[in-house]
Length: 281
Image (cartoon, rainbow, N blue to C red; front, side, top):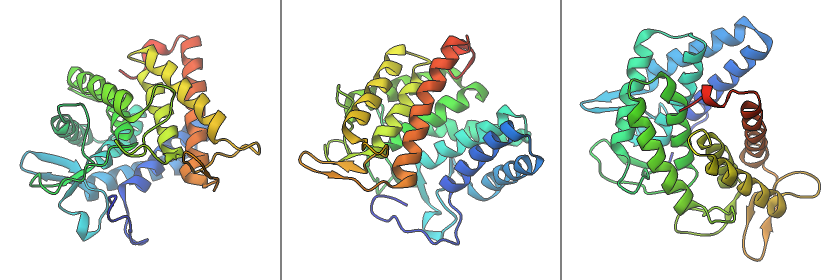
């Protein structure tokens, strides 16, 4: 659930798996037009609202899991992942009106929780204490969620301002100029494949507001290919100054890098086909 407690019971639903499932189901539905996939995505989105959404006073967020331990802990990237997933539901118009109201509340809370330097802490309790300051790829997750939901939000100018500020932090503090990521700022090593992949994904999306970010996404991709891809094609898990951990983790590295590199290709296609100004922010 955090950098200090990462064990979850396999019988307890969590928001990451649920959100990613919604995205996959909607993408699958778009390709093969299968009613079962549509129904599953709608059911999962309703489950997010009914089971994961928490409203306490001025606080509105999606909890990380349904475990008792997560009840009063706010994990910001969890809310952002839910926003991104539900945006896929909104884009297909498979939703109830209160879903957008809830997502706007969560968005406002995310924006209000952004620190003055543009970053977000990883987590805090509902009293704003016991902060876990973990500065890494989770910053990208939050930006992704805000970017995706912006087109459905009643706060577009506030989201744009937050995204611009967060993007500057993500670029200036969590990555070196050559495309290498920090492990967790200010810790430089190991260079982790998931950090690299998420950087490619987020900076490609940020190309909508500034093409320099898209150019930087390609720089991250080239550095990663040159330094962390095996001749057999797979990507290494981590790189240290004098050694590499070559374990080819499927989800953590291979799938995320495939998504990352595909995002670059898709962005190029959108620009070529005149879709550039029709999407995102």
